[in-house]
Length: 195
Image (cartoon, rainbow, N blue to C red; front, side, top):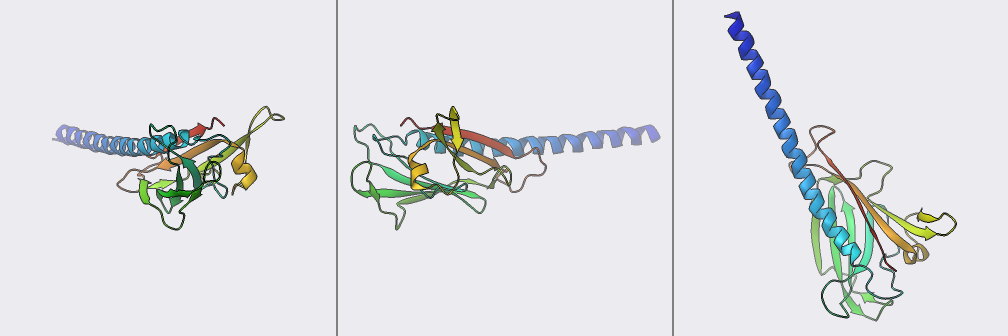
């Protein structure tokens, strides 16, 4: 009888541990797959940001939680520019797009009073840490022989000299907060501009 109880307790413990590990793995896969789609979309748009000579893609006023950039996509020789602003709003990464109104590069004017579209790229997202911004900006420096981190919000001068935008965030599972420290997906990426 006692041996049967020991075997029963051992089997129950094994089932409980297996269920917890499966739930943790499923949560991690959910967080990673959702985060990768959002990061890939954002980086694809940042990579399509150099659309005209002497037109800086990064907008002044960009911060560690909000970035504005001009990009375009399509097969036209002169694609129509779009102003996108991606912001961390609460725990959601939201993108608002603004239509081109008038002007030519680099003096485009956008209809910034109302977005033409707004989409939530990712929910349940946070900065990786209190000291790591979601968006970081870099310029080139001959003295430093490489990239130099820029302070935010970006001034007009710094926006015009930004050559790289870094993106870093922590995505939790879609079901809510992470059950443990290993569940969230910590994502990092960046886009270098060819100016």
